Image 1 (spheres, rainbow over the protein chains, first blue to last red):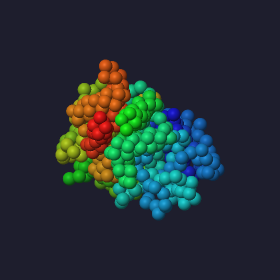
Image 2: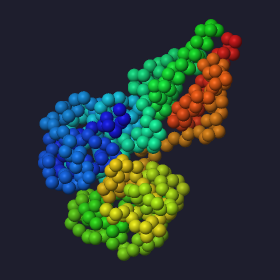
Image 3: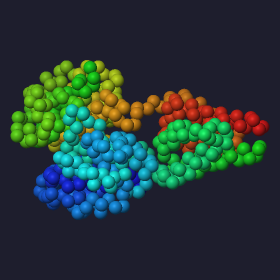
Length: 239
Length: 239
């Protein structure tokens, strides 16, 4: 399933209904469709509908929950934060996050946005696997809620861009298959003495990045694994 | 002078004063400060001030002009357009534009946004050197005015400080180096008997596509060539 249909935008206790509508519009312009609200102050509301313009369908299909826990139960959870937090969680940028979600995370993803003034609470962060922070001017970091949704949605769309550019739809293999490939690759590189088995880290990390970018589909993965097997086989033939 | 202080955001005949305020806020979060208005319907206005939140200073310093020509007289002019136009102007994406403006264009830059419903007119386009179009869902392209300003401002900020993007700007090797790599790869695949030298075509085409997507930079290319050499070397060792 492509990234855009795997991402759920979760607004936690949004205070202004206008922002809910504007967020829905921001989502729809980038091809995101799943909006979830946790304890919205006012919803449904005329301001939300007015600001949604052509994205009122996302408001109609939006699910409303009483707790964040229920809203993200089936998801990989990413919290957004304007401030630098002293939270012991990995913090990433929208671009890096989008690229990683597209290539390395399978399944549903929930992207959380906190209440307008205060942001996500520590209890909300407890449910997050990682954080994302939009690079902003340190003197004035406070993006409007819908503007923050717009930037994240934009980066998610661009991470999908190779597929959206008109090239035939591709289905990269999942993270498990990539791991099996990396293991195989590492074994072979050690066997041909390219990789020092005591210090494989840095080189393997670079190769992982390279092949993650290529995002091989099943057919291509078969070719790559076939090449590795043939190298192994050659070793066997002569050894 | 850095890019952010060279860019002037020009709103042409904005209809809703709230959008002027929201655009000012979007600008300021990304470090842009120069706002110019051409024939705003209502300005100054309470809605503009309300939506600007902490960016009211940009509204106070905003210049207002009667004609677009005066507003951009000293600038390199880029028009934004949601639709695909039959305008004989180069059209680029926000990311590409920002990176090029940072590296190749000196002096002032004016970034134009048209009226909410209709966008820039053909007369406005006559004053533009090029166009920029935000990649959006073809089914629902209509970003809110301030949301469009937010995305452009965000890309300008990241172009100014690529390290903030999280995905550092990469410099893939050129086509010549890629061809040398493909030749080397083909030789090695024939040597390990993975590739039938009589029918290399289809498999090599697939591998080319895969590695073209990965777009290796120089460092990564050195690793790939090193691996190929090590496979060759192993053959030599035993053969």
